Length: 319
Image (tube, rainbow, N blue to C red; front, side, top):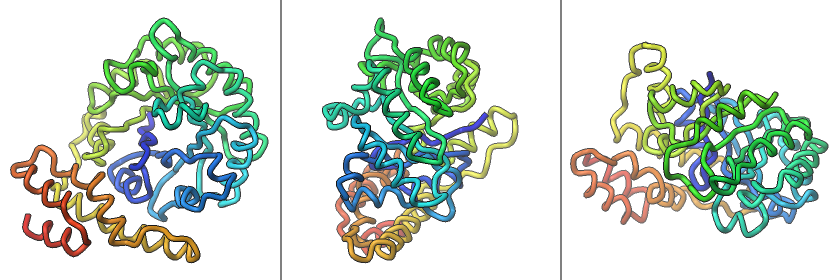
């Protein structure tokens, strides 16, 4: 059973993926990459194709609704040469800015379109092509079986399924009965996604017969959740737990290294300076490490108001 970090917009960048690999993840996904933006030469989108040397297997996830766009994206990902283990099409993201382009969750009810997009990708890459989707638009409109059939017909290598409907977003229990039915009916390996945060959730999802379990939001403050779950399922001792300060400091160091690598890889572009990137990531992500600890509110408030790397270091040094 493999445990994989799910793609999360604005979060699953190389520093965070590295934290999760160190925390026991067996695989990960990039943030969602716009196929149209790649085709139109949007420089910042190419930043999403970067990868740290310390990472394990990473699949590149793209979104798009145009066959020419996804074909171009497939060639662009192929051109970075051995960086990724697979090329994934997102056909399930419910974010409005994705859906209104005809991509993401808008494809859940269009298996024929999904098949065409996957074929266009497969014809333009040497990587295995995979699909990530949901059960359907809402309860009573289950289309995941047709989507799996489309993936099979297109020659996809795997399907990952968020076991909720688009209308449910990220709330409610995953529909493991439908996921179990899918596993029994498709020839493709299936990775299950949705609500897994601990041993019990992972065990329940594994009981459906999936080949892998995907973890998303539970990893944001606990990148070591993968190792914790693996140990709990096997009856092994839990790995030593790092303090919030240790996790924050380790992650911040990776962010600064990432900023330097972007500047070196794109000398003519304008990636965020290391200080600004550190502040941005602290405000959107790193503050989560202090959730639930004594005095967390005060620490988070100070971190959220920090404007420079020096301020961040000063705050952390007092904890």
